[in-house]
Length: 299
Length: 281
Image (cartoon, rainbow over all chains, first blue to last red):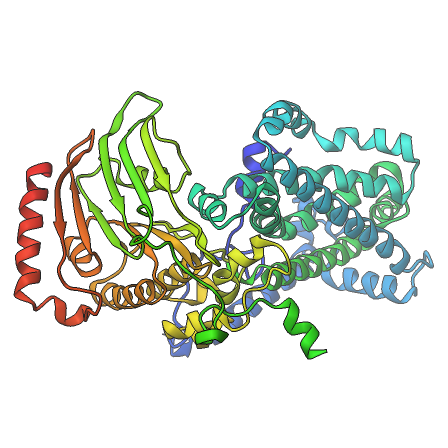
C-alpha cells in the first residue's frame, strides 16, 4: 500500500537509472582493469556466467532425485525447468501448444489496459497536482480527504470496479487509474509547491500575473515531477492490470495465469510470468527513455 | 509579407541611432525628482524583530548605490521594500520609475532563478513572455545582450550546461533585458570565485552605464562595493540606520582589473572596513 510519504520519496525526480539498479551505485572508471581485463568487459562476462549458472542449477539440480524428493521448492513439478518454460513460451508465441492458445490477444489486453490507465492516471494526477499546488487554500481543504483516499488499499476496491464495469478491460483501466493517479498527483503537487520564493518574486518583478506564474513556471515544474514518476507509474500500472485480471477473470495475462495454474501447468505458468517480465522491462525502459528525453535538463 | 511580419515584431531598443532609434529614456534626475526617495523607512518582521530602524536616502537615475552592513540588518529586506514585494511598516518609498520604453524595476537574486527548462535566450527573454502580445522580444535585442557579455554561442544552451559564472551572467541579462529604470542586486555574485566575479563586475558595470540603469547592490564584499558603485552606505546593526555614506570617485569608465591596484581603492577599502568593523565587532 502506498503511503503519502512513501509515494513521494519513491517517485521524486531523480537521475534516470540504466535499469532497475539505482543510479547511485558507485561507478568504476572505464579504464579500470580487474583480473587483467577491462572492468566493463569483465562485468558482462560475470553477469553472463551468473545467469548461465542459475539456469543450469534450475535445470539440473531438481533432476537429482535425492534433492527433489526432500526439498519441495526444488521439485520440478512445482518449479518446472528452463527448457520446459522455453518450450511453453515458444508454444505460446506461435500458438503451437496443447491448449491451442496464443499469447498476443491476452498480452494486448493487459498492455493496452496498462498504457491507457497509466496515461489517464498521469494526466489526471498532473492536472489536480497543478490545481491544488497553485491554491494553498484549496489544497488545505482537500488534503485530509486525499490522504484518506490514498491510504485505501487499492487491491481491496478492485472488486467494486469489477462489479460496476463488469469483467471487462474497463475495470482494469479504472483500477490502474486509481493507483497511478495518486502516484502522479502527490508527485505533481510536491513539484508545484517546491518552487522557491525568489523564482516567484523574480517572475512577479518581470511582470508575471498569477496565470503567467501557473503557465510559465508551475506547469513545467509539475510536468517535470510527473514525468519523473512515469517509470514507477508504468510498473505499478502493469501489476494492477494483471491483479485485476486475476481477480475478475478478464481475458488478459492475469486470467491466462489463472487458467494455467488451474490446469496445474507449471511450465505454462512460468512461461507467462517470463513473458510478463519481459513486457514489464520493455515498458519500464520505454518510460525511462521518455523521461530522459522530455526532462533532459533534469539529468 | 516581410513588412507585415516586421510590423508585429517590436524594434530592438539597443540598435539604431539618431532619428531611427526608438524613444528609450530613463528617468532624468536633473530635471525631475530622484528616481527613488526613501523617507524614514523602517521594517519590523511579523515575529516582532525590528530589522530596519530608520533609513532615508535618494537614488538618482543611472546611479549605482551599494549597501553593506552586518548580517541581519535588513539589507535584502530593503531591496524587497524598494521593489514593492513588501511594504515598509514605517515611512514611505516614492518611486518615479517607468520611463518611455522602460520597465520599472527588476532584480537579480542571490539564489538561482533561471528556469531550467528554458534555454539561455528564452530565460533572458522571460519578461517578453510575461508581457503578452506576441511574447516576442524586440528583434535582435536578446542576441545583442548575449553578445555584450560574450554568450552568443550559448543562446540555445540550457542552464545545466553552463558554468556558475555564465548562469549569473544570464540572470543579470534576464533582469536587464526589459531595460529597467532600476536594477536591484541581492548579493548576486557571492558564490563566485574572484576572477569570475571581477569579469562579471566588468560586464555589469558596462551594461548598466551603457543602458543608463540605476542600481542598488547589497553585498558583503567591500571590493565589489567599491568596484561597482558611485556611493556606498554602511548600515548599522539591527535595527539598521545609515552610519556612513562614502562616495566612490572612480567615474564611469573603470577597469575592474586595474582598479584593485589603485592606492585610492585600497584607501577606500580601509575606510569602509574600519566602519564596518565597528558594526560587526
